[in-house]
Image (cartoon, rainbow, N blue to C red; front, side, top):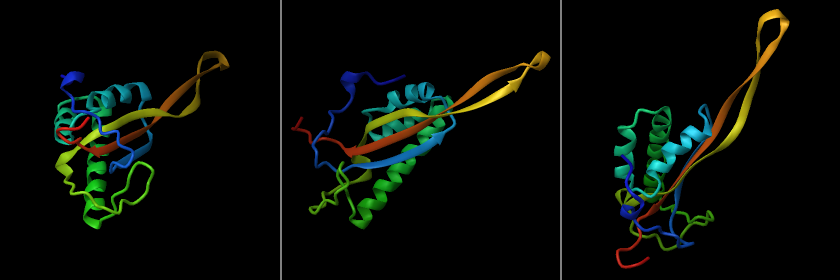
Length: 150
């Protein structure tokens, strides 16, 4: 069951906040179906988001789980290498004291990708079109906001 919006952590919308992301392009899933799964983890700490995805049985949950793990690995690598970037892609000079456990899902979206269009032969020489939708999945992680701040 999804966590209600009032129980989710505050958003860290500071423009110079560290940000880590992972993108899966051309995922073979409908953007509408993937968007439902992405909406269920938006705003959650990464540990809760992983737990929630593990207990969902949709195909989108499997893809989102892999993508979230990739974003966590990207964050871990960037923190270890000292290459923490902000939302604009600038390397932060003063490296904040970050830990992967202190991150939350700032943004989780499923955008439209291209549609695969093919024709299926039918009776008496006719043909019907069919379309296979693709989606571009994006997850962005940010540190949890400070306890006293907004």
